[in-house]
Image (cartoon, rainbow, N blue to C red; front, side, top):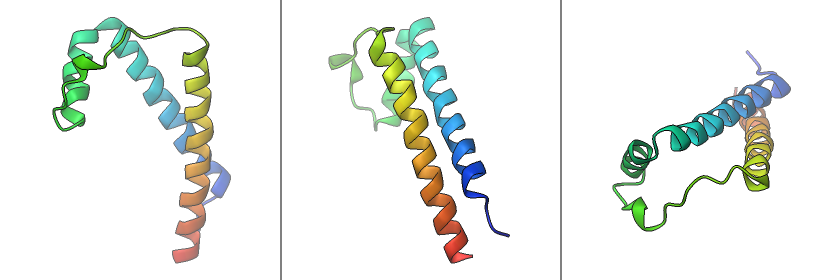
Length: 86
């Protein structure tokens, strides 16, 4: 069954954007726990050396928008490749 490229791309874009927002909220609510958890994802690299407080300015908004656009583009590629190999 072929994947609808737009639907697949939107699903990935929204999923990654929600993950980005969840990550931001987690860093605001529980920064120490978030740092420990994220360090485990980074093969136990000591993130305390590079950690900074979350910035809720324009960079955060741009980051969320870039996450959405990037997720959409990755979803388009994924769905197109899926359809090609099916």
